[in-house]
Image 1 (cartoon, one colour):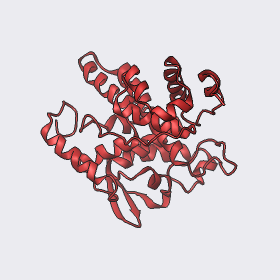
Image 2 (cartoon, rainbow, N blue to C red):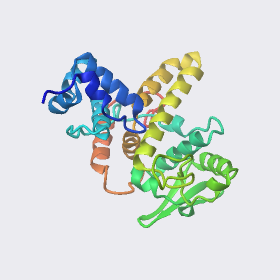
Image 3 (tube, rainbow, N blue to C red):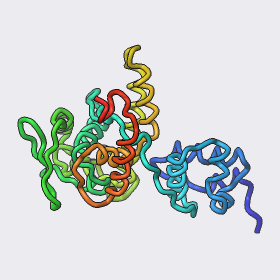
Image 4 (spheres, helix red, strand yellow):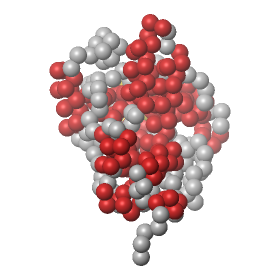
Length: 278
């Protein structure tokens, strides 16, 4: 039986939750070339990447989105972070009282010193984080970590969540702020890995917008550079960059890439404002 026309074939598929904009861009790129989902599963993303000039990080992202949408594409590994050193501190700065913003800022502030995978942050409990006068102490079954520089973000997040009983009573450091599609989803419950990844991407892009809008004229070039890097920054890359900058490893996962990043950083001139360039 012949395949339906590409437009009709794509309409039969459901957009993966949390990746609707990326899915629409993927479909638009395929339709420009007259490619349906079955053909894309056979050819992979190479024709789309060539036509759109996608970088390896973008190809990795859209291959993941395609798999979430039900296409049987091969897994594309996330490339090494580029550049190998990047100023991540703007992602930890408090810019308002929006709960979603403060939740992610607190996450990033913790992750600079405790760069755990998403799955570990998903299961991190509030009782494992202890605030002292100068820093946070984080205790897990793997050991104890000192987290300097995260108190402001942590206290801001704790203060806002204390205003909402369901969040104040939640055991999770990064609880859900709204109900999701799952039957067991609830406000204050544990987020999924995918939801956290999407949350980080949104935060990085909003931070990029803020940098562009608020940079002084003398800092505009540097702000634009950071904004471009943040636009496609994933949490996995954030984590590897934190490891490459000297954060204590949480687990063996990611250490090979982090070691490569350290070696590359030692051979690459650092830009002003980046770790190693101060």
